[in-house]
Image (cartoon, rainbow, N blue to C red; front, top):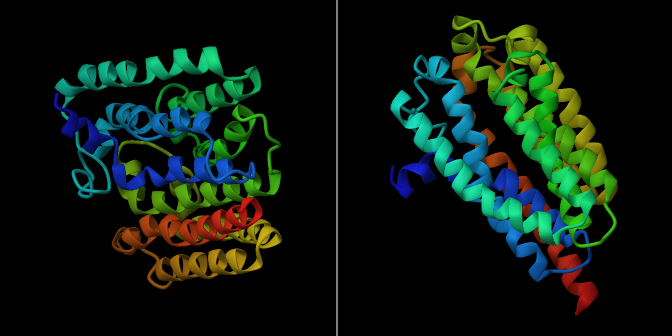
Length: 279
C-alpha cells in the first residue's frame, strides 16, 4: 500500500481538527512556539489521523459501501484486502511517537493523550461509541483534548474555557455531520444520535452545544463568539429549511470549512496577542 493511499485514507482536509486545537493549546501557554511541541504537532498529522480514520474505515465497510459520498474528500472507500495493511501503517507510524512521549512527557500529559487515543479507538471499535446514541457525540468532544495535553506537556496551565468551548463545539459538529448519513446508518442498524433524534431533533441538539461554545468563546474574545454563533446559525438554517439528509450532504462542504473559517480567525487573533506580549 502506497504512502499516497495512506494519506488519502487519513483525510488531510480534516487534519485541522487535530492540528488546530494543538496550536491553540500551544499559544495559550503564552509562547508562539516551543520546540518540545514539534513532536506532538507531527504526531497529530498523518499518524494520529490515520489511527482515527483508518480504523473507522475498517469498522464501517458495510455502511461506507452504501454511501455515495465515500471515495472523495468526505471519506475513503477501502477494500477488505486493505484492512491489515492499514493497521500495519497505523502501528508503524504511531509506535515511535508513543515511545518518545513515554520517555519525554510528564505523566499528566501522557494520561490525557492516552484518553485521546482510546476514545477515538472506542468510537470505531467495541463498544463502538458510534453506534450508541449520545455517546457518539460525547466521544467526539475528545477533539478538544490537545488544548489540555499540549499545555501539560509544556508545564503550563490549562485554559479551561477554551477546552470546554471546543468540547461543546466538537460535539455539535460531529452530530451535525452525521445527519447526512442517517439513511445509510439506519440501513445497517447503526443508531447514531442523528438517527435517534431525527433531523430536527439533531438540529436542536447541535444548536444547544454550538450556543454554549459561542458563549464560552465570547468570554475569551467577543468577536470570536459572535462569528461562531453566526456560522453555526447558517449551517443549522441550511438544513432546517428543507429538513432532509440530502440537503445536509450538499452543505457538507460548508461544514468542513467551519473550523477553517472560525478557527483561523480565532487562531490569528490569539497568535497576534501572544506575539504582542512577547515582542
